[in-house]
Each structure stands twice: as C-alpha cells, then as structure tokens.
Length: 60
Figure 1 (cartoon, rainbow, N blue to C red):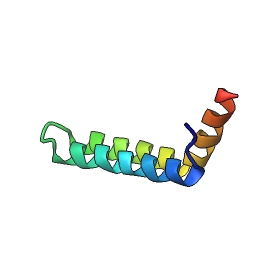
Figure 2 (cartoon, one colour; figure 1 turned 135 degrees about the vertical axis):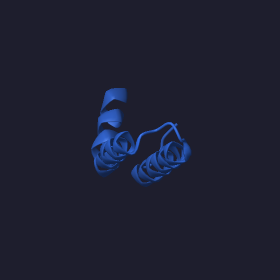
Figure 3 (cartoon, helix red, strand yellow; figure 1 turned 180 degrees about the vertical axis):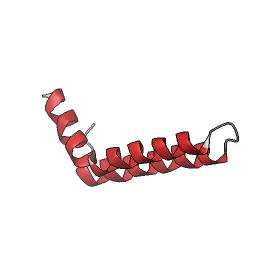
Figure 4 (cartoon, rainbow, N blue to C red; figure 1 turned 120 degrees about the vertical axis):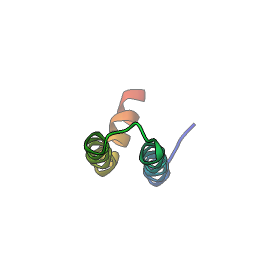
C-alpha cells in the first residue's frame, strides 16, 4: 500500500490531535507533563516529512 506524503502528514497530524485531545480531557494528566507531551508531539509533526522519507527508505 502506497501513501502519499500529503496523506501521511494529514493522518499524522490528525493522530497527534486526537492524542492531545484525549490527554487534555484526562484529569490525571498533570499540566506540566501535558505541556511536555504537546511540545514533543508538535516537534514530531514538524519533522513528519523527514519521518515519511525515512519510512519510505526503510521499505526499499
């Protein structure tokens, strides 16, 4: 199955958004931990083109 770069980025961002919304609604997640996770996931989203390329190269 081949997925385009744009589809990968869109699906990746949707997944990150879903994870963050679930964490934000969970009362046991401390605000400082939530902020750390948000920063980490947003950095991953920024580098999603690099991740996409690395995944494509690993399949070859």
